[in-house]
Image (cartoon, rainbow, N blue to C red; front, side, top):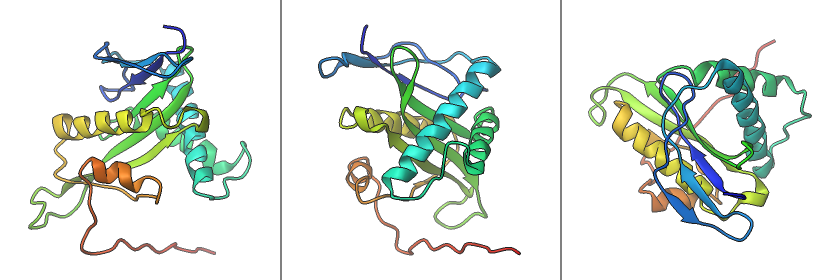
Length: 196
């Protein structure tokens, strides 16, 4: 399928790929995407995917007008290491879209978090959705939506998460609302800890 888009899924133990579940028509030159299901990758492929996810994370920050620095920035190296190690756990999954030659062009990341139980969440297990990004030339093809939908299925079917949180940009709000996300009664706040 020349020009096909592939949706690839996580997580088994390491960073899995999956069997064909659907094929949708796409625009000329980008014939379709498909969803693949599980089989662990070797560590070399996992390391390569982690580098691609780190690059996509920088694309996400650039789209948010955040200064990312050059390609040798310490945070990018740390991000690649984080993806390499965290994707080998059962608490983190990434769903990606890739071109036929294997280049990752869209992604969504999910992480299981554990907090003290509450009346609304007696187990304290939640999910966090982040790193939803598509390379600029592949936008408006439904790739981010497909990655997020697969991730929501993972949260529902594989994890014990009772709710899923995210931080939405203005351009992503409508996607998340269409998937059932809504505002919270108490706003999120943060504090950057300054040392030395």
